[in-house]
Length: 250
Ligand SMILES: *[C@@H]1O[C@H](CO)[C@@H](O)[C@H](O)[C@H]1NC(C)=O
Image (cartoon, rainbow, N blue to C red; front, top):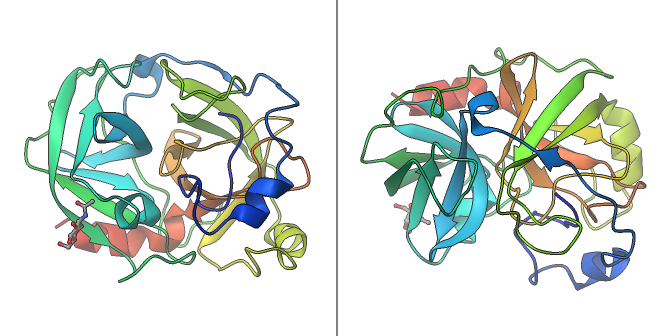
């Protein structure tokens, strides 16, 4: 967890402006701490070309939830690595045989996708599904949330071990006021924002889970700069998309 930008995997497209806006790695604040997979057993790595591409969460024995842009931006087949704190040394490997996206093309609104794996997840203490937030249930402003992922850390590299940060939900209007005059523009009702002190999700964390009270509240989606306190991180609101998720996992 460290520096990120509009669509957290969108590194070099779309975003020269956003990239330039980020103080590049200079603050070097440690953006999180190492986490055990047993504490976050729903966390998976989404792999493209044998590299970490995005994060995801196990929703049921055959489906992973991730960000829509993790699917649209991919140019090669995706794999899911489950059951390990090391993304490159998984407990199990699952080929994604098809995906379902909320939108028909890449979009900042409805940045959510389902990855179907042909090989079912074998649940154990390192591999478990995560319950979803209720239908249209909004996280409370000020709620404490946990975000995990293998995205780049303050040294500028993808993490080897899973990292975790704590962050707090902020008011949607406040967040909208911060973003409305930026490249991101006005927020969509299916987005929620959270702020952490000098840490945040970064490139490679897209699609990774945000957990409140043991349930999936958000998916890492967008932002401007990972460590820039002016900009909170934007997450997909899982409650807002819950009905779509449940219907499409049938
Ligand atoms: C997602 O599904 C679409 C439609 O079937 C397919 O064309 C695309 O290649 C898939 N993307 C990935 C990354 O597998």
